Image 1: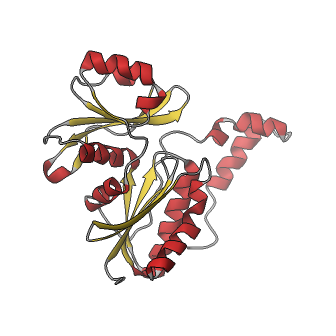
Image 2: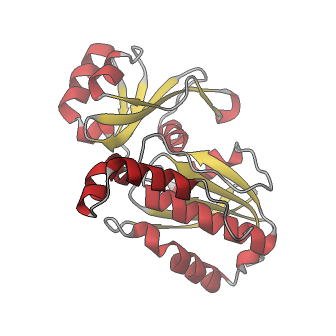
Image 3: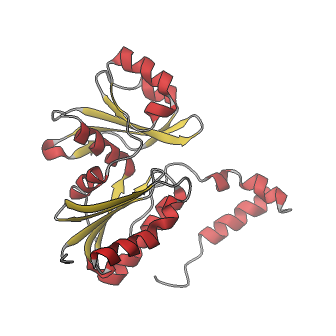
Length: 259
């Protein structure tokens, strides 16, 4: 197959690894790997194998869209690093994709929704916390966020939903009874999808803004290691104040390489 004008979309934030190759945002081929806790680690070999089988050089990608969060910290880091390496290799332009927006595109893809429909997205963040964001379906299928991504408790999220909204995300399965209760009370339309399809990823990328700059991760909550730093430090014989001071010292260091 010809390698010119190829687009690549990467997602490693929803408990799986998804790769989609497209041309002018028409999906050509896709792969999805679902291995508990290890899918993201397959990114480099899976992409290399896909390029080899399709006779595509990794430097051939003109545009690379990458889900930059929220979700698995490891998945986010590996995906963004891969996109940055490919940018340096072939000069591709990069675009970040909001992982919750990709689920909103999935809901729109599954249902015949009119312009102006409100789509609420909620995914598991940690115990009793959700990543939440609401979107309005715009002209030509573009999603418009009505508020920034937030961390919400399940109860406060459901209570704040507008009647008649479409709800999508793994909240539908993780909090099934609560979801069912509010769905009846507020006439919610449920789209039970754990992750977006590769078609939805390509659709989201179509509306993304591409640039030559590297991508920044979208971390909504603090990492577990930082939250547990006091406990981890005590096990190493280090005081909490010393551990936090050392952490921020390392965080503020300038990298030795410009790569």
